[in-house]
Length: 381
Image (cartoon, rainbow, N blue to C red; front, top):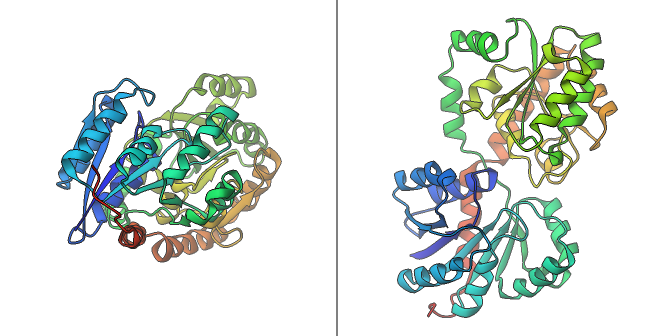
């Protein structure tokens, strides 16, 4: 049995961390023993508890930030104690998990990294990253688009790159959707969305920052509500630019047609209470939330950013538009809002696509094969 250390220095829980959990949960326990190593941030407490519920060992590092050198010493100590076969670092930011590379060099443990959101770094960080990649055995890209980008950024290491798409816990999502009576839908529309039962709801789930392209969506709303006044835009999530968006909403005088709900827990129910899902991202490694909307099932409007076209098929499961383009968002909404038949067609096709292509169990099988292919040169330390 191979022992796999899953390591991250992230300060918060997001899409990359969800994939780490699903990987640990569904990994074949007759072949692999996953162990989580992460920092001791309060924001990660519930996430770590989920691992422990699956009887997965968790190490919490008492560090101040991803820059803290104690990452190196504590990680090295755990490797000495556990004698793992593979260190698997999840790179939530291309400059993160720097101490994993150094530990891999000093202990000679095989290192796999999954690049969840690659982008070009500053010259100094880029120099370090290129040097550090020498100590990596395999690089996992979560989309073909990301593989192309990584190959361009790090051409000397492109032979190490393989693609494993993210996956969805289909059983969990379907169970949540099955437990959703009509009275819950009515309550959500009335109490959370603040709209009538027959209002058409366009929902976005995203962090409120520039990379998600929220301002282009907000700028499209005045045009849409003029033609379709019985529509409501719901944005679920929070972030550093919330105040900017609130000011823009006031400036455009569209307060009655959009609501910023902040962070919410019962995302399946909120999506099920919607009619269209819209993600206007400027940069997106994969766009996991599109899968969640498709399994609901909802028709999608999204951008051509990153790995999104590998998830959403234009003209089949939704409509894809150029990034940073309010006019194209308006055109897509004008196409979907009046056509319930087209929305249903895209929703059904999207649901089927998720079932066939994006099961987390299949993702885990792919990682298992990758682990098995890694030759253990020697035990660490």
